Image (cartoon, rainbow, N blue to C red; front, side, top):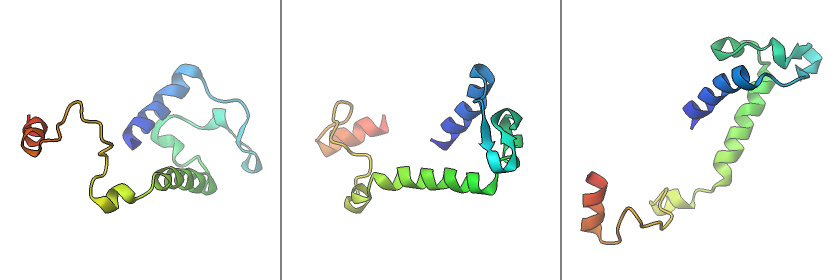
Length: 95
């Protein structure tokens, strides 16, 4: 997920342009002033990184941990490609 978001974050501003306005009004930093790629890491203020990490944590934790407690993370009962039969399921997963 992180790699996909990073790729989109690199490509999208180059194609669609950058947002107007300020990324950090107190620092006088505009969105247009932030370069693409890894050079942007040093330009974003520390509080901005804290907000990004807090949002990511909120998204991850909002899904709950019941799947991990039951030992079946990602099993949502969608059995089109797999099977209820353990031997058939193992065969399909190993294919």
